[in-house]
Length: 270
Length: 270
Image 1 (cartoon, each protein chain N blue to C red):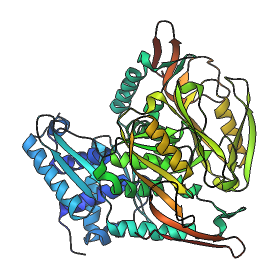
Image 2 (image 1 turned 135 degrees about the horizontal axis):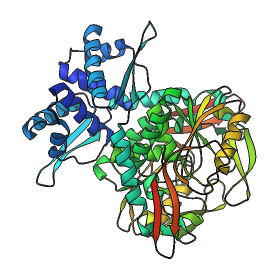
Image 3 (image 1 turned 60 degrees about the horizontal axis):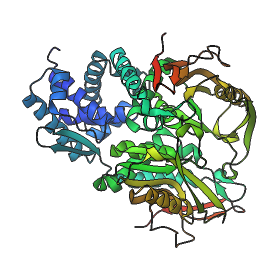
């Protein structure tokens, strides 16, 4: 193709990198795409790296060697994380979110592409160094957060089902005790969904006692995979002892007062 | 803040636009972020527009007036759509995907952040002119595609549940006939999940007879909302008459021969 002007090159390269976090691009990919020499591409990538890193927007990693190239890992500035927490606390404290039974309506937030993307990027920044192969969640409400986290990490997404479907082939099913309801629940995952030895990050929208996360840990072990962490959006202050190792959470829900119409939720203290 | 060099400005502006498809940014937002005058920001945006549009990567729209600004709408080149179809056909024709009962294993593809993002951007490009307020799907397998479509459209995401949960408040429930199984099934949506008068795009991973899509259409009408289209990844060739208006699909599944281990799937002819 014709050689593109430098500005166009920068824009094209940046778009490919941002659209594909965690994906390794050989410099020759951008040479072919823009008609520029690899040396020019190197300079462009250096400019992009400098601008992103100086502004806390993520990192560009260079992998040396014949199979090497460059890849983008999203970053989250501390200021951005803090402002996300503040905005979430404001949105979730709205008394109109209180549902009969003392539950909190959160679906509009956790299903929103904008919110879930922001939350997923924070989750990813917590575990980027671990470089998990998969993000795993159980249907349904955790899926958008898990997908956006996986996207930001350049990882795959695995969704555990509550029941086994005939359309997914042989499955592994476990029964587990839900800590909140005290009921026995079921989780299923197709045999082929997760390879043995994989490193996974567990993501969910909400944790009370941690029974669901404990079930996910069990199913992960059943596949001879291993979990490198548990990220949740909201954990409850009580019970303070969870059925799993301490999750990493953005928010802690202390109390919902149905009578007074008050939601007491705050950024999790670390 | 200090005035940033032009390259840094371009990179920061482009990143904000790409990260937030469909979101309107006042030029003053970028002025504050980069320390540059609005006139410089205008020039930067013009450069970005030119590079994106010349390369078929999307559009930058300018909204005039005091409440105006600029927004990014992702675009998909015809070449990109065609290559996505080819790659999907190759991946899905793998005989190892054939499951007992003549089903096709697709979860690894439709759950993958990379594939679902590419598919969602194509779905979004089909309906961008309609500017739907929400993308709607029914749990579980359609969720990643629906989320990525919503993200590319700058729309919200609404997820219909198969059963009603106590944690989502009052719900509207409908019963519908699954065209494939001939069984009565249930769908529920919280009252507050969809506002009356909203324009919605229906997204799903798979359509055989169209019973599920018909159920979604019914629930959309029940909320006094209206559907502007139905996008599915795979529709089956048979039955050729669906229970809903013709969906827009990427792929048509003609036949699965379990004995010979053959999957006959091809790009949908338009």
